[in-house]
Length: 261
Image (cartoon, rainbow, N blue to C red; front, side):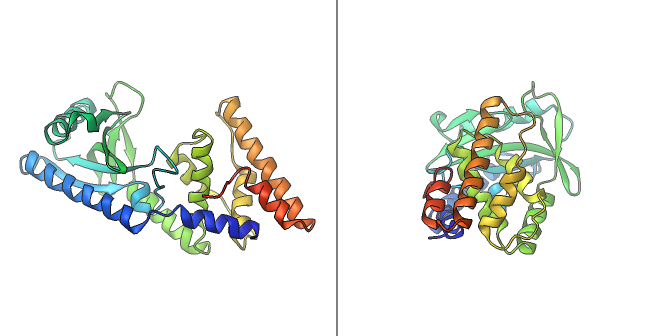
């Protein structure tokens, strides 16, 4: 197996299976029905999945324990503070799910269901293509703008223009990220990959090597910087071993950072 084959095999194994996707779809359908039953007509303006599930970059839970499905609930009344809408969703969750399945994160209500977490994100409409969601890590008194559909389209276009290798690259890097204690947030990592410019890249290992060589460490703790630097050294060593005619040794070196899955 070559360096490229190892990454392709790993990326392929990290795809959500059809049975896993069916379980998630069933949970989403049930959630949708419960929201309709719970809230009076006109209270909720829109509700939809977004994030990595929508972009087809969601990781299996066994590969990334933080893997979750983002579900946005857009309220028609936009006059209240973010904390009010979070309380609406918390009350809904307590009414429709067991307390053992519910906890609050920053700044969402999380449903811990079989094989998947669903993060309920309250929102209000900002404009036709943007939404306001509670700003993270504060007292939930301010909003931040998000454009979920815009990034979805950007990733999809990037994947199409780059030989269909952007989604496999994201899965491989998310796998490494989880193995190393989440050096980057999931969205941050996807955004970095999508906005990187890949020059003279022909296969997945070329894309992987190009991205890793430029992976930024600004603002990271020293521990996290060390993990990125280690990844860069491993990739450089594997590349040299391969070019020197030692493909097996090169693959074994790469597996120090990206073990088989």
